[in-house]
Length: 336
Image (cartoon, rainbow, N blue to C red):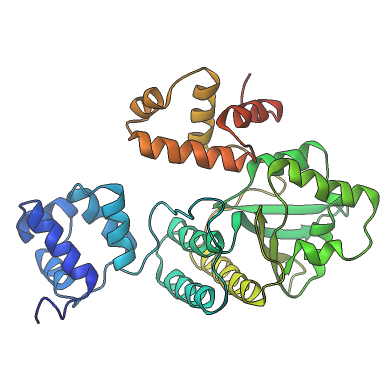
């Protein structure tokens, strides 16, 4: 097999190994795999898992961008999903359909929930969906809604906390429609029908959290429960049929594969909580710490730290890290 015959991943892996001055034996020992299997990877006779690619990247001391390039070459989503600036044109038509299909296929071979979520985020980010989460919806014995949120996901924590504090769950029109819907819908479908004053207010308040639209995909279950994906967006084209088809395909794949992997879920109606990393960085920002200080404290690069701060800010629906910190304190997610 010539160099040209080999797949991009194989060529890149071999080039990175040679750049590092490592033999196949040395790299196989560092990455905890057999020399024979490494030889198969470099000759395109074996396909790696996402976990294996990450181990190889660590052993080769690759940069974040190099690691993500290796993941993409192997057919996986990059570790850090970059959906680009807010004004970046959204994908539509055949391009988004192809990306949705590729993402769904890749999910079927993923071996962990984190990879499944990253693949879904790649598609959702391309159509303007900023945060999403899946879970199970059912009626409790008292007639109120019970919601079990899957731990895997990228939820709008600030908005979820706002809903809980104001006890909106049983008045939220999106929840009631999700319970009986049999296909995906966008928020604009809901706003075309008459809404009660409190239902309209709930949707209007989402704007304060940077949410103007969203996509919901329900899967009705035989026991009366509903497995569903709900997502939130600041920029979304509700009139694009390709968007709905692509989002629906990936939402179904996300739910199916989280079930396949038996991903963990929070107990029903558990209050939203900031991820530990988000809580830490927002707390340090509130204490006046710099990005450089936070990066050193977390043993991460400043670029990685800025990415994390940006993710925490978006999750809070805030326009700045300072606003995210203030909002987190007001919602009881962060100590004052």
